[in-house]
Length: 124
Image 1 (cartoon, rainbow, N blue to C red):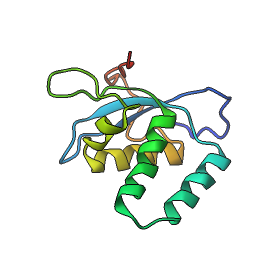
Image 2: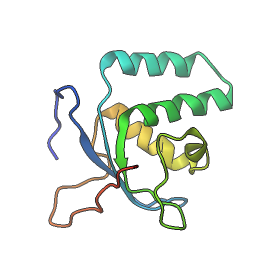
Image 3: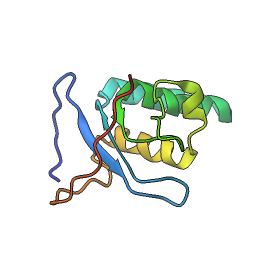
Image 4: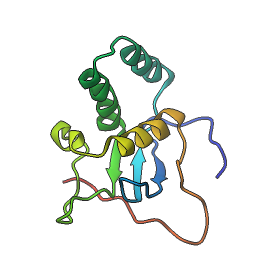
């Protein structure tokens, strides 16, 4: 996948995180961060060593930039990425991977080929 260097306001990137030891494969769409948003994220991250506050910095990034994702609960209902409590019950390894993809402005593990990944689900 070719690296894109400019994103229009509201443009989305489709991304994928491969299955990990503690989480399933998932796809998601997000709005890329601006330089100012990335600097603000890094400032907040560096301003605290408290584990709860550090996790909040990461979940805020996800809540503010993810627009759709395919992550579901055991009962098949979607995990609400806008809900802090639901994000706090999500495996930290997965949240870290998603945050990293967002900060890099990448498609994560998504590779252009004939196989299309599962479509992200919209939270209603």
